[in-house]
Length: 502
Image: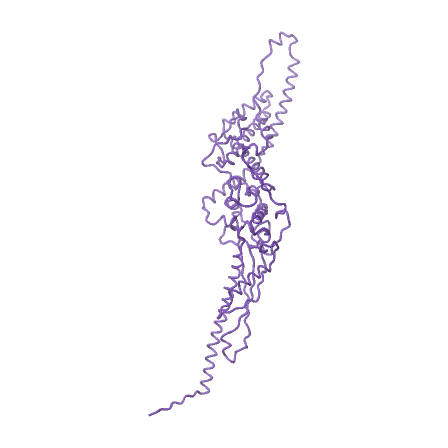
């Protein structure tokens, strides 16, 4: 027996079905809209990171500094070049079928350059590079070293003043001697026999160590501390270096250095900048660290100026140390008495004694600097056992191959460079660093036209997108009514932003 089934739907059921489908597709469209919003956030982040991935390779390879060349090797900064590069990445990655978003624009609203504010952004990156992974003990030792060097260099005692006072006292003693000799000649007996009988054999006074040091200094600073057979670098910086021209300025500010970051700079330079004792095969200057401290145009001038600063610092430290060695003070007092004791003037004798001590400290400091330049360590504050030179034979220190005793617990040349770096202002270090970095980059094949004030280290991007509704268009009642969706994304790129408090 055949049965016939009639299928029909009421108007009510049709309305309910339409409402349910509208609700379902509307909910799905809401999910789609929300997903598009998440997609724009992902694409914006991808766009920023893709731009950051174009960092300058030589700058990273030799100095571990990240920055994007805003001129892309052409020498002229163009904000649009960064925006177009970001747009290319967005278009390549925004073609997902379900979550298709069409990038409609990019805008680099603000940006910071590596050279802004005296190279502050570079210094921030350098401090962060030095900070991560550093042992706490090294950080503490470096802080103590910087504080010691700062206190030594800022002392009230000036070696030049000590030597000048000693010389003035010697001049007064010479005037007194002349007066005494003239008075003695008037009192001599007119009898020739009596003169012969009363004549005494005069003894020559000891050689004045201040005269020895004066002769020593006339040789020139490098001749005192570096053997003549040592070949020095002849590299020079171009007159077109960043510090000699007006630099481009970014539009986004960078936080100033903290006290801790300033102290960390020396540790960064030790690892990434060449110096007299450590070559890293960088292009440009060979004595990069010495340039940061002295700022001269050539390697030899920078080495000379740095050695002068180092010698002056060691002289101050040794002058303080020698006052704590009783044997040295006694020897200096005996020498002063032999030179000017005839005056009977305590002030003159004391001033000359201090001049003798300062001269002795200078001779010891020359030996110290030779040892430091040879890669050895010397005691930060010397004791009698660590003292090398002898006042009676100070002339022997003229031999450029003579060096101070090495100290197993002392500090080396690079440690002193850390201390001297700490004495320089951050802006001075920053702008001189720009000179070094640009010189090295421009000597690399393919990067000849790079300019350090084109290097972007931070920026704020705005990204705009449009997308089409999908599920809403499946409903006749909503098709074409929603139009296109618009999205705006904002992202920051930064190579020098703190990841942790330093």
